Image 1 (cartoon, rainbow, N blue to C red):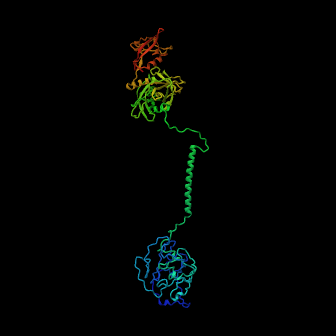
Image 2: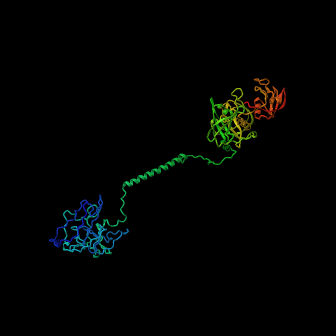
Image 3: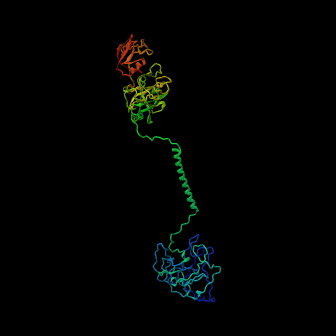
Length: 610
């Protein structure tokens, strides 16, 4: 950019310069050239901001003697000033609405303060010279050739009234305006301001306070010492890039909103169906409890004490059910459930909550088809209360719980269909040692393979029997283990009164005692009743000498028809009736001998044989 105007050192004009110009053309001096050539590329002059670098500070000449009313800098020589549009605030004063910067004390005369070096004291002002112009001491009037002169801007000498021709190649209509980027026509001539409104030199109206002239026009547009313009620097206008960014953000937000709404609607439709879908009426959720004597209430109370038993032996494996007897971990089940384990098998117990523990056999008895196993290291056991099977009546509601076909925690319900049903189970060994004789409770509650050993409970969730056998339609077997047929409503349970005595003996001694009458029965007898054998079998006499039967007067060939008034139709029924009592109990037997009926009293003996 072109160099800024350089301040001329104030000095007295040479004497020959004072009369060089006269009022006529003869005496006209050569036109004065500007201090620097005009910039054809429109670079802002006089320290205006350029497009590539900050503008240099404005250099203001220091007049030798201050003119009356002068308190500011003057434009460069030869620069015409456009007319003032009206009274303006003092030079350097803030615009209306801005806080005023700190003001220096009023200038009363002498040298004006040095604007570029405020820290140093200004030199004393010299006396005005003869060549001082109205713009300041030692400064001739600077005007562009051909431009009209403002009133009051004539120099005191006669040479000031002669117009100076424009330099060659200069644009007569150019007025430098900082920041406009190029040539600009000058303002049209205007009428002179009143004498009292113009300062010497024609630089603007003089404010009432008596301060110096106020720069206006091009000189007012830029001044590094003035207060900032109202509103501060203008923010650059938003371009198309910003608008595109806002549009993109809005589109993304709209897409996310639409996706969320669409997903929510889709999830609702998927779960609850469309608007026009058929919706069937449904009852509200019933979170209330159940009565304790309902099936649900009974099951809720009994299930925590029921377990599923898995047995694995050398030759076979099986699944059954059991229930907790006490907090020491004793569990009662059927003998045929644990029998496959043998002596080296493995027994695993799974509780209704899912926890599993190993178990060992405490005692077992094939004659009653009962066994007791025990788990150790298990806490929180829930023993089931035991009822009284003698108090059960036909038609009482019952609930059977077990794991049919390894389906744990299965609950079925029914009633007591009959009492004192003599049934036999087992007998796979052929010698009768594994046959169990049960004076059973009959129920129509569905019992299936896997229910063996599970509890049959009454309406108060008390155990009244141990589910042991079913009558299957396909095999006719009386034992659950005899076939894999399903339930046909004929289930049988060992009465809890009998099971309780056997379980206590198995826990305490490891063996169970059986009541006996000391006679050998003829199991092949087809008549009504149980006949005592007439011949010895296996070296054993039909009536054991000194046994309970011999003491009661029973003889070989007698037919026993009643026990305590209850009819007996076979040998198996007689065994069942006897097994339903304890050793030492006294029974009244009715028998026939030689076509005559007679009654005898017999005290039951005890045997530990299976």
